[in-house]
Each structure stands twice: as C-alpha cells, then as structure tokens.
Length: 105
Image 1 (cartoon, rainbow, N blue to C red):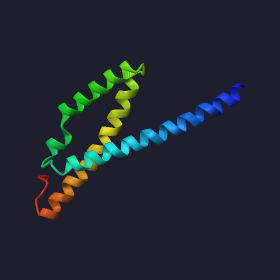
Image 2 (image 1 turned 90 degrees about the vertical axis):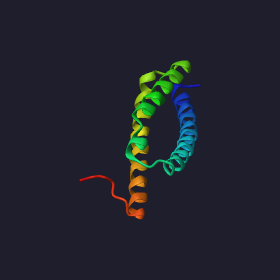
Image 3 (image 1 turned 60 degrees about the vertical axis):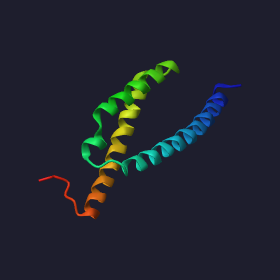
Image 4 (image 1 turned 180 degrees about the vertical axis):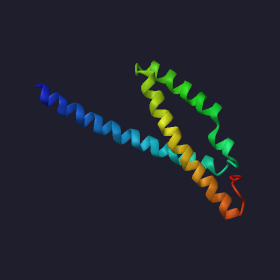
C-alpha cells in the first residue's frame, strides 16, 4: 500500500470517528439540556467545582487511553464553555417566561 493510499484509508477512519464523536456530543448535549431544566440559578449552571472535577476526570481518562491530557482538557473546556452558554440562555428564557429578573443591573 502506498503512502497516499494509507492516508486516504486513515482519513476514512477519521471521518467515521468524527461521526461517532459528534453523535456522542449530541447525546451529551441532550443530557445537559435536561439537566438545565432542574437548575434555578447562574451559580448552579456555572458550577466551577464541577467543571474542575470533569476536567480532572477527562485528563485522567486521556492518560489511560494514551492521549495527551492537554488535548482532552482543551476540548472539554471549549465544550463546557459552549454548553454553559446554552444553559445560561435557557435559564434566562425560563426566568423571562416566569417574569423573574436575572438579577442584572
């Protein structure tokens, strides 16, 4: 097999992995959306201690799987930031619908 053929083969593998990863991220997002419905304030949404717990866990998982932990951490910090923004939007929507202010001045 030539180098060019192997590159093409590996790219097909990457594309298949990307489909699986995105499907899992969509599943995780659905769980976060449901979880958001049970959160009542910004502190509970942001949960800095929980964020650090998750980051620590995924760094350890990355190491177990032979992946550089920095990649896992950067990926999860970006994921968490986006999902936190999604949760904050939903929290504000619920508060607006209930006629409750968000405490902002």
